[in-house]
Length: 220
Image 1 (cartoon, one colour):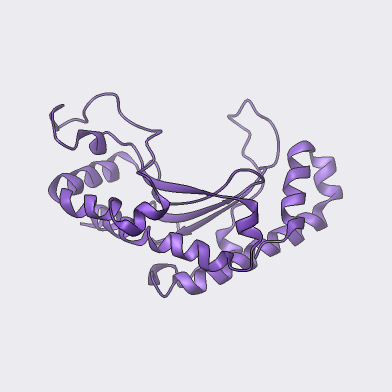
Image 2 (spheres, one colour):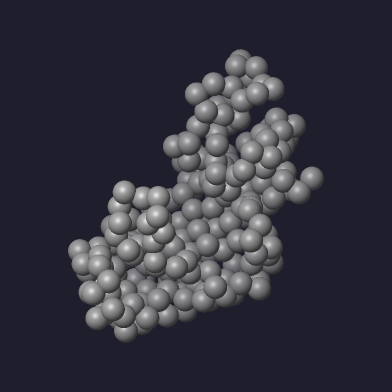
């Protein structure tokens, strides 16, 4: 499980987002990161029994860097206020579906699917949804899926029908999506609980078929 000290570090980092404070508290960062890596290792071990694609991953390699790329950002804060964990289901460096865990005081969530795929991949996914609509709907409408996710995330969406599809297509709203992801919030109490690994793996297991569908779409 996560430790309260990990949340405490992130909360204080959000207030003191500067190099001087971070360097003075680097041992705390390293302890917090190790805590997250150990949690992720435990998640991977159990998730691999459901999705073998993650079997070769490790917590150390899956926890994202805390240093921000500020070159093109108005926000010059040097550090992220969270630990982001990406469990990819494709070869390293290849865009594709993944499982994601976000650890941040007051904004923890679990997600999965394919976020902002490149043009050729989103085209392939839309085509697969058009060809196999019922299969896709059975995945995102399944009882287990609905237990955690009301619907797919819809923040990124085209205003008009994508090229090649009529505006009156019966599933045009699905085809307008730019990302095919689903997410659900977690609270700190759940992450501090000793059953958190089972909780997260149960959620990820309901994303497995979605990831598999998306992976098949871009691989065919």
